Image (cartoon, rainbow, N blue to C red; front, top):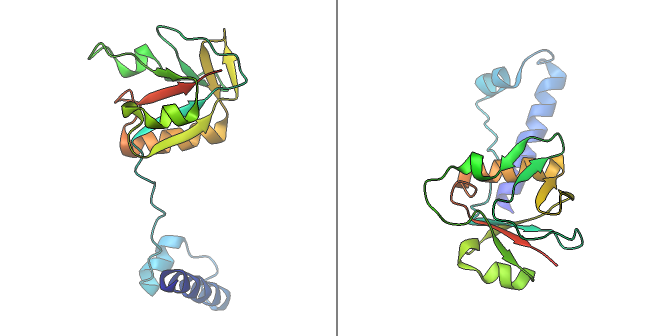
Length: 152
């Protein structure tokens, strides 16, 4: 509660300062002149990713892939490399069982696929891709092959 109040107070101060005499300054200049730093919102610590594909009639595959809507490969055998022989994904027929898998860890990221290619590869919408890539950047969940597909 106190932290939220401080953030609101800082925003109010910045608005007043900008309306009075800081019309053309960049954010960095405002921080330099006022000494006010607004903290970044932290990305949660995810331990894996569960991709819900129910309703898309996804079939299991030896080398499944995940793409964005532009056709860019986000996850697959050529992205994570052959360092070990573990499977790229685990499959589950229920979300509860997927969450209980060791591969998911204690705090998996839960996302939904928007469509499929050949009923084995997934396509994610742009918002979901952004969420996945931010989480992977911090937690390396794709590199760890901590990926589970929930299928029908």
